[in-house]
Length: 144
Image 1 (cartoon, rainbow, N blue to C red):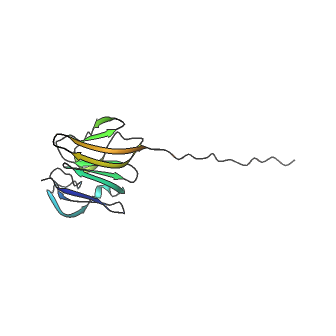
Image 2: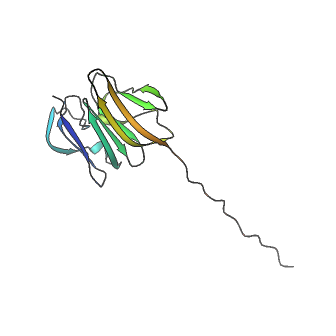
Image 3: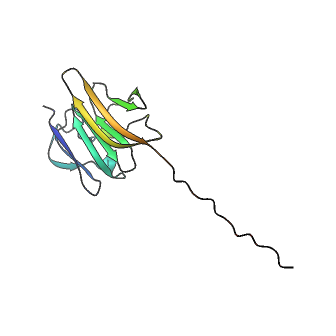
C-alpha cells in the first residue's frame, strides 16, 4: 500500500509519515515506512504553506510560491506550466523544485487520481514586482 500523510504546521514545517515505498515522504532515506511524523529537513529553508499527496507522490508549496515534488517512482511525474506539460527530469525521494514555473507564483496544489489518469494541478498567479516611485530630489538654486 502507498498510504501516507503530509502535514504542514502554521510555522511552515513539513511533516510526513506512512508508507515510503516510492520515496513519497520526501525524507531522502531508504526507509519503507515512518510510523511517527518525521520532519522533512530538506525544506528547512522554506516555509511550506500547502501540500498535496497521492499516488505515491508528494507536493509542497512554499510561501515564496515555489512548488516541490518528491517521489522515487518509475512512473512519470509532470509539471504543468502556462498551458503546456513539462516532463520533470528527475525522480527523487528528496523534495525537488518543479521547473518551468518561472514568473509564476504557485498558490494552491492538488492531485487527482483515477483508474486511468493521474493529474497534478498547480494554481498559479503571475509574479509582479513592486512598483517603486522614483525618488524626487529637491531642486536647490544657488544663492546669489
